[in-house]
Amino acid sequence: GAVVSQHPSWVICKSGTSVKIECRSLDFQATTMFWYRQFPKQSLMLMATSNEGSKATYEQGVEKDKFLINHASLTLSTLTVTSAHPEDSSFYICSASKSSGATEQFFGPGTRLTVL
Amino acid sequence: SQQGEEDPQALSIQEGENATMNCSYKTSINNLQWYRQNSGRGLVHLILIRSNEREKHSGRLRVTLDTSKKSSSLLITASRAADTASYFCAANFGNEKLTFGTGTRLTIIP
Image 1: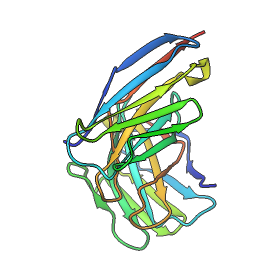
Image 2: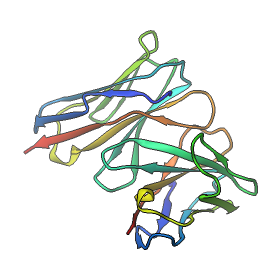
Image 3: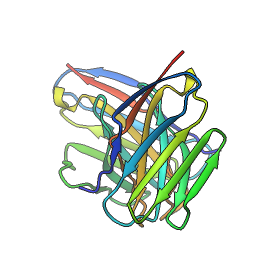
Image 4: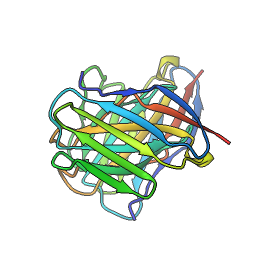
């Protein structure tokens, strides 16, 4: 199997606070993890790619100081939305691949973030 | 943008009918993948088709790839109510990233 979990599944926070989302590969070691965001009825947009032990690579237009990514181990990556605002409300989905350069990704169930 | 286009954006059919969704992309791919997403949930991988393949089957799913037209189609035969979901194609352009299409919202009417 290749199971990826996310925690929390949903979170509501006040504007200005920071929120941390965890992505875990449960039964495999994930060399690379990806973070996506998805607005209602829209497609997934890649935010960043993270490799264990190194800095994340952010896609154009994604603020790295606002969306902090830490990939501390081969089974855990975290996304912290700092100083969240209502426009950050979205569905955040992570995925993981088993080896560097692998093209198949295994997706987590997503985290619904609502910023009031 | 390399984001693929999918059509139709939405499709409603009667249970038992076949559903066809199309995906187009702009530059050469390494492979193309199809995913299903139930409302508010994560993605489920359906099929991966490589650039040197033209057709692939998995159960009631059939995927075709036409690299000359830079397009792919997903056919779901004998649709069921449980097939109601959004379907996305995702193109891999040779690196580890996936670029997702705009998606098709499929509704199966019982």
